[in-house]
Image (cartoon, rainbow, N blue to C red):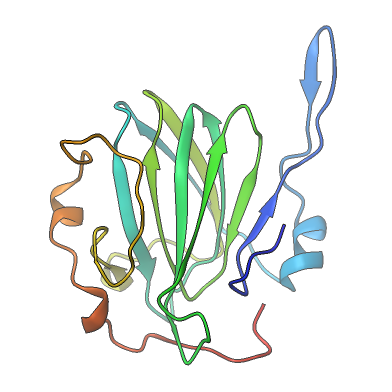
Length: 187
């Protein structure tokens, strides 16, 4: 499934099952490249969030270490968000949000030029994501999760989400340098 914002894609891999369980091809470069163009996956990340309402984000890496991500939930559920930070894009500053869960089996492709974040909907939620560039602390960047210019309707508890110290102090979207430039030919 594609969205009004060019770039992010929602996939649901096939599962073949019987009374014993199921088998599913959860990743195929050949299949993904049909939608994204050539890419190289170099790193897998796995996160565990113990409490429902844990919010991680909004994160991205600046060039030349920018990352595209293929995200999936392997246990629990999360509301996953991609924010367009490509200067010049007709959807600059807009976001796409989807529910990913172990039950719905969906995967979310987030290309370079997007900030990423998620809020867990269940306790002990685990996400796995494949990355097209290695983690680089010196290129690690973020945006305030609650920035009013982004108007993301996060599904967290009334007393607010559980945040890291880093995510409590991310800068405003309006102060973001032009790390990414939009081009009509981008996928």
